[in-house]
Image (cartoon, rainbow, N blue to C red):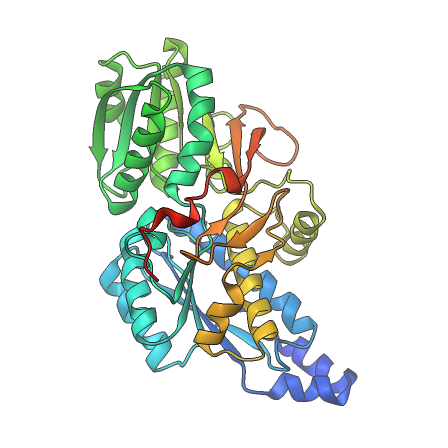
Length: 400
């Protein structure tokens, strides 16, 4: 259990200074949320931000007396970006710890196995990190909701801006994982619709740190853009190599489906470059977004990243659903969430499609700057409406 649970001081304050009803709520059986994240993999920095955001949301609910008069606690597990580990952790959460809801995962193969377990064990599962389209497509199921925009949505948003900035001769560096392949396929599909010629691709192992050979192979094909189908520390190391090899001087651009402050901060302003899809950014100027930023700064003394946003916003929707449903029963929660429109902390609408449980939301497009730019490392080029990116309701691929 993490600090997302009731802090001892908060507990004492509530019992001694709150109303009798609030004091009872503080000692009631807690609502348990089991979070799986890759805390010991190349995604570890981003996953810590995911947990930070979830903790902030839990704190806010607990300060208001919890949910259904019960405190909320987080149980945290490391899936190590390994599906076998993920299934062991998720099974323990459900069968031994009796969590009410499962949440998290970044790697697609981990998300897939936990999704199957959640359905088998009749437990709601909120995916926060994986962008695999199949989770709300061919591999969808009734008990899984996906908060993250999927690869198709991200690619559709960013590709037109990459074409405009860098032209149409592209080379791809792709991590050899389920996630990397999903990213590559989505970029190819979206790119071909804009006349992109893909002149080559190098597959790199998940967890790679040296990208010199991959960039050298790309340069030999004379691309106008190198697309990085990478994430986490893989993407950080690749962008450092791009900077060190001075590809920008060769008029070869860089960019891809997804980046954000969780990538920009480890890189630093000097090494950050390119045009990227962004899930959220601290420059989003809505009241909900500003309240979220203040809450994270108050607890962790730093501006939140988009991964922090995912943890916070997803946890908020889980707890609000329990409050509306009046129960933690999975079947009831599913019906409460389906089609539900809510404050996604962005300018456009946020809702879960009832047909496939995909969160429909704005996708931002940002350009990385080599200097400080106020709140964050990216200049926002566009906010693309989720309604324009989501799969049609009658697509028929998902059978819940």
